[in-house]
Length: 529
Image (tube, rainbow, N blue to C red):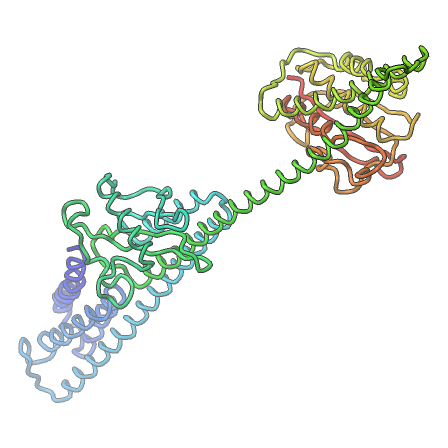
């Protein structure tokens, strides 16, 4: 109906324009030469061609030809002419009007095509930008569906994702639909989408030889109960795999899709297929990464059990077996030495188990910080008391005057400081100093909060470049120390990071800057509140 009304208006306009112009020009007939009158009609023909195309312009040219003959060439009000030369003028005018109409209509068509191409390029650019910028597949598919509805005037646009090797489909978020879809209609659409998936062919084309020439005329009485058109269902392929189905409903104005709209729908369908395939590959990569991490953790745990747990157990077993050996005579000093060794190995074993349990509880959210106002200098003193006297004597604690209090879990932060100091002592030469400094700081590079910066600096050999982040991974030991004489579980720094993050702070590692003695520097920042 709208298209017919538009065509009627386009042909009515030259009729009214020529009639109005003729009435105005008739008033000027005493002052205008009969040959000049023909020039007054050419702008009307040109305007019709530019505004409405070739057909209305030809109608305007014919009407102008007749009106010039009837009202400006004697004898007036008849098609006959007195001067034979006027027939030549009429023929030249008609030819000029037709040529003008043709050229103007071609220019109009080229302009429209250029605008159409520009619109197509802009649409494809926006779609490509959405695909490349947005990571979540559901959001990208919703954006593509919304673009299709907006640009093509479709009543609905739905994307179905294929689940597994069968024909089962899952409806992806569909953006904003112009017409709400009831459950019965959606069920019918899903059935047709599954049929398109099962047969791997487009549904809704009828007997057409190119896409959508018949799709908008196909009807299905069960869809909506009123002979609603079924639209088109396009299987989505990526890397020779069927990954889903795109459903595009009929236009809201019932007109068929243009060739441009067909190209746009096909192109955006390819984009949707790429998005679904990319999401599948991302999920597969994440699963593969998780499996690799699980294997790494399994190997690390086996190594932990075989060495860090087995070694102290073996030492304890050997000492206890010796003490229990029948007939063995132990002098008091040897017995005391064996008992001290048992006690030390038991503490070592307990530390490994506690670190494992604490890290698991933190990562599971079962050991949340119980924050209270703390003096970190006092917390550092508690951590020092946990070290053997010979090792504690190597630590130099330097705190700023009037160090602000922070809200933190006293026990957890003491555990962090103990682990950092033990780590520094373990990986540095015997007797070398360990410096622990504390000062008020504003974390300008991250949160901008006020708090306290704590630094633990040793004078060992530092760590390998590139290990700054990996040092805080579970079971990871620095590349310089893997397989070395210094044994460890790789849990201490991971535990420190989990605690500091639970407090809203951050922790990092760095080698000593150039020009200073070698060593590693571990720092963490705790906000005041």
